[in-house]
Length: 620
Image 1 (cartoon, rainbow, N blue to C red):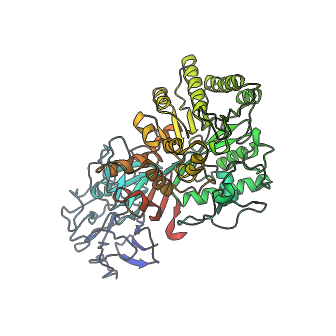
Image 2 (cartoon, rainbow, N blue to C red; image 1 turned 30 degrees about the vertical axis):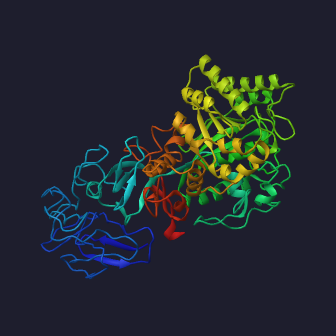
Image 3 (cartoon, helix red, strand yellow; image 1 turned 180 degrees about the vertical axis):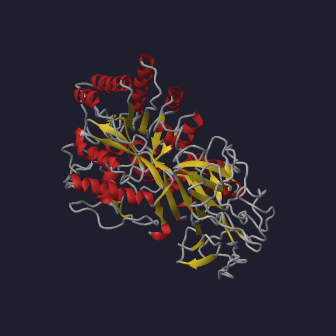
């Protein structure tokens, strides 16, 4: 836990070493008033008297009635302030008698001794994001619950605002700004974490993640054996009943989503609850604060794995009501077979009967429906204008007696979902399939104008002309860059190198104005967004000289603000702006100073959801 600086009501200050932390110094301020003394030195950012800190180790840690002179902390990767506080000054302009005193500082980010007889507070500042600064003293608004300071905060707002620190109160972002500005929010009970140069990012939104299946399989994935690496927790043995070789070699020539030959992974309701919670622990260790379960419902009640039926949705509803979910979850209902056929009658019946109510919609929402429109090109299943080696062109998975009837049934599903106000995510990989989906969405929006954020999942063979139409319709594209990198040779093997080179056009889609979300499709691959960014960058090719930082920002947005839009939640999550939810992660280094290929080696040190720490690498 590093060094904890504490203040008692007699202004006696002690520094106690309680272990080594990789997340920096934490400052806990007791609720008692602090009284100033002539020789007291303010604790940096802690709102405490007599605890001046420096980055040069611990000295003078003894206590006296006048406070500790020059006490500093270091060694856990972060210091309380750059050079310690000198005198009784505050960071910024102090206010005598109103909760702070003193007017000068020595070093960076310090707060001075409190005025005699009044609770200790810290200095004011003007927030870089526009929240008016107030002193955390008497008569002022409540202080922050959590402050992270001394690093770089990438808000990923529309202005690409950055800061040095962030304050959180009541589960919401209170302020982003300089360390001195944010220290103005520190008061009694504020927990302070020094970043020591590390980066704060909005929490990651893995917008296509089969969490229940992941929780059942981990540490195994479909494209690889044991993937319990990269600092992720939860790498114990997979659930009993797992069968099959999950190596890439065995996946070659077979549909990676096909679970028909699997032994049941999850047989009981309790096993499904446990798998969800297990996945939650894993993704928290990766900085993931939101995800989409893309396909749960009665269409899979008899499914081979036990990971996708209606009972899984029921388990989520229970866990949400219990407050047990540590990430925000969006569910798409499934009324057909996973990676298999669906009938128009079953989908229409399911849409009409869909239960969407949850206890906490901001933590669990049933947004709409998923339809599997076609399969994948390596299996010769994607419906395309190209020719496979056997001369075929694939087809739709939607049931029907002819190609036209199947296309008509897919259209009817999309029209009805839109009419009912439900989002639809369509698994579509072939160019003809994607065209049919976009045609149907355009017709649906003509009939009932809505802003439901319909989107194409995978989109392997989407064409430039269709991307332009998608942008005009506000449709999103959800791409798994890791799948692109790993299966491009398979695609080339059935449709040729030129088709493979133009597939998964992430850069072209972004340039066309299509909202592109990146995701993992875990457990097809591990749910590691850092690797996803590295894979996306590799697939897109080198950016133009000087555009490297813009590329990294765009890829970070594809894991944060863009999927927040997909969730219909961009007004309250996805970026670190005042009043938005405090979902964030602490990364071991600033990603904008790294090449994407370097990112997978950088640790996630802390994950926060609704202002609460749900993962701390120091205690893992």
